[in-house]
Length: 87
View (cartoon, rainbow, N blue to C red):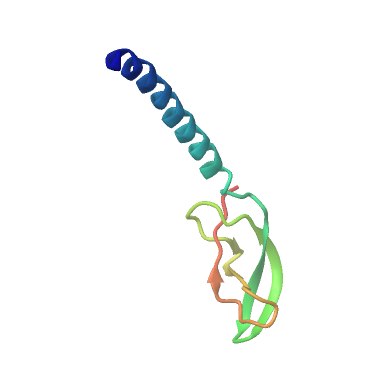
């Protein structure tokens, strides 16, 4: 009797764990966003100009000509966070 219950429970548990793993990997990929972020050119400390949109994906730096693009964490902060861009 115990072996028949064991034989029925193990496949059900395996299916549940596989389903949970599949759902976890799908939700993990949903966190990668392709929304564009405003890129700022740093003229001087706390003096930034909005120049170009960057998608902040990949490892290639987001540039406009020779100017590195930065993100501003808040409207009153300095543009100091490096942005990346993948076309």
